[in-house]
Length: 205
Image (cartoon, rainbow, N blue to C red):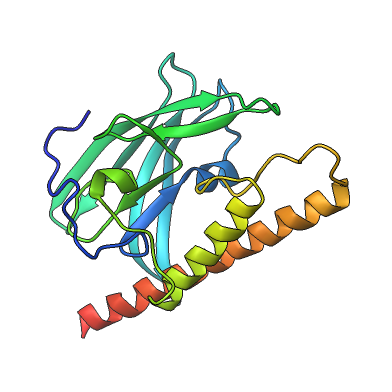
């Protein structure tokens, strides 16, 4: 557990649409999340109009008895950050396996890690006291809320862009709903990155 957290639960008016985020859905998209999997020296980048404005490196280790993802990067262009975030898996009643981050501050499971402005580490929404984006906020917030509502209406959980097929539901209906959620997830990410890109350009003047 990290012990030099700055501002836990005290980031007024900062929402999940601010900063950058790392979701378990990203790892699922690029890696086979199953025991025995390992990937080292990987990169995750956030860009706008082809220009990278933030990036991190990571190692994914699902071989050890205590699986983890190691995050390492430079914060604010001066501070080298290197730490591990534990991973755990659960097996839902409907089958399959679901992976979670263990927040390095709260010790609780979460599907998404956030890195809001000014913070050197990634942690859960609860750790930072981040508010969910509201309807009357910017386009990125509205896109995120739309994705969240659709996912939850189908029985899913934020951070995992999929949900179990309800008993009796036709496979074509299930696949159509999955496609709807995945499309909203991609759109939300695109709008989110566009919003960050605009803020980044303003900072550059």
